[in-house]
Length: 362
Image 1 (cartoon, rainbow, N blue to C red):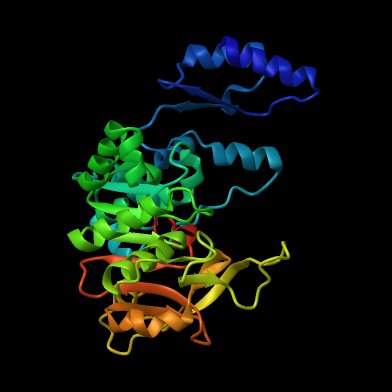
Image 2 (cartoon, one colour):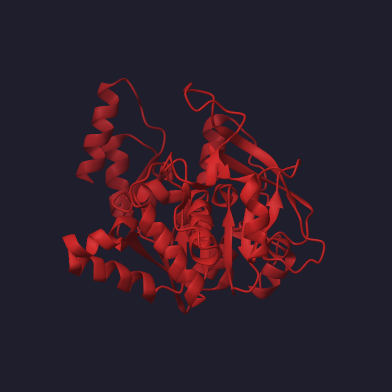
């Protein structure tokens, strides 16, 4: 109780009086502990709540609801204690699979929490990037992967691979680190190459794309991950050894990725294509991965953040060799999705699909 007492004392010194106490602990608070906190912190016992360790984060709302924190908040704010509505948007089939009635209080959160606890087989996903030393840089990607693994009933294990460690010069500098990076990449069930600016580690990402394409390993390229996949395909399948992005090599003789034509490359500010934009799925046959993933919707809206895009002049040659651009902007000038139809899963997007992922809708 001492840390809580000191915290309340500091609050009072700042002129603040706590109405509720939420106490973190390994085990649920005992009644004697509540009484002591109530006396020394001058907070009603009914407003002291236990936040003990739980099996997963989705059980936190359930634990708080069992202690009627909603009622306490409503009483303190003078609000009517209304019935809770479903907030996660789960389907009726999800409730039936969990043997729960949808009208039960917080039933949707209970379904989600139980689903996390019952995830069985492990799926290993390698994230190949340049900021792997700071995992929070990819927090949206991590959360989206967790949402997807929950939906599939799998336990997610993330392998972090610094793309620079996959490059040939890394083998000369530190062969053990190089071998370890390739071992982590090859041990994964799937690979994600997320977005990132600058040329550091780009060749490692290109090599990762090559490994996934040639070994039939599932590959998801996001923004810069799409650019690296296009560069790799142009080099390997078209024989364009100098293929590159003008972001990484301005003087390249094979610019398969270029700065957006309508933007200024010299004037900084306002040059980035940002926000939610429409992508038209160009697939009349309905057999593309994009068509299946988006349930046959002809137009989707995703969030963008980029300055570079696939060179429109190279698209016919790339498609002739088997790289399909199945998503484009409304004018058909920008390549937003590309995939390999002969591959089990080789899918790349110019947008950031992870930003719209939710626990019940990965």
